Amino acid sequence: MRLVDLSNQANISSAMLSKIENGRIIPTIPTLFQLITALDVEPSTFFAELNDQNKFSNYLLIRQENYVSYIKEESAQGFNYQSILEHTLGSDNFQISLVTLDPDNKRPQVSTNAFEFLFLIEGQIKFHLEETVLEIRKGDSLFFDGRIPHVPINTQKQPVIYLVIYFFIMEEQDESAKPVSKEIPGARS
Image 1 (cartoon, rainbow, N blue to C red):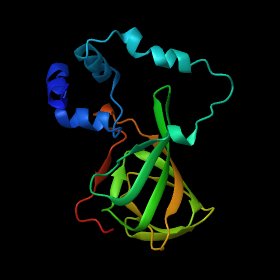
Image 2 (image 1 turned 135 degrees about the horizontal axis):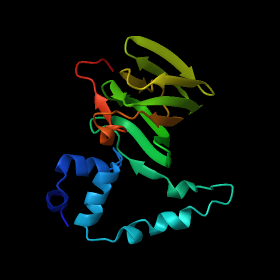
Image 3 (image 1 turned 90 degrees about the horizontal axis):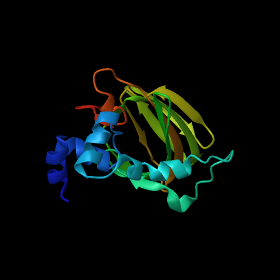
Image 4 (image 1 turned 60 degrees about the horizontal axis):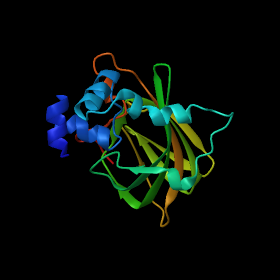
């Protein structure tokens, strides 16, 4: 099925459906059920895998080969994201990602509708928070409001690796847009 056909059947814009498909946003419950209905799938079938995963035995081991690569910003160069874990606790959503920055990575400053916790595993970066530039080294961590325009820059000759945890903020006017990063026009990178 083509994306445009599914978007018409589910009465969801193609742009929104593309973002859901690429893991850039998490659909609201009504949107999810519109998709399930359009795909002609029983909700019990759709959620069957979750029932198996909910047999939690006090730990969760996630193998590296199960990390899911994704593109967060289409115009970014040298940003390699892998989602390790996404979870909802009540009405709160969070995502843990492993990010590798290639040397000379580029993108405009972006804002993310989330609070972010960043832990630098390997290397060092210059982290731009609007006009403020922070030098972050291996072992350092940073917690900030992701709605502030920001961009990490790798000025080294080898890749930089960091872990980032996104604590998504629920927006009353548009719940479906919470994980999306927005590029800031004219922002410096």
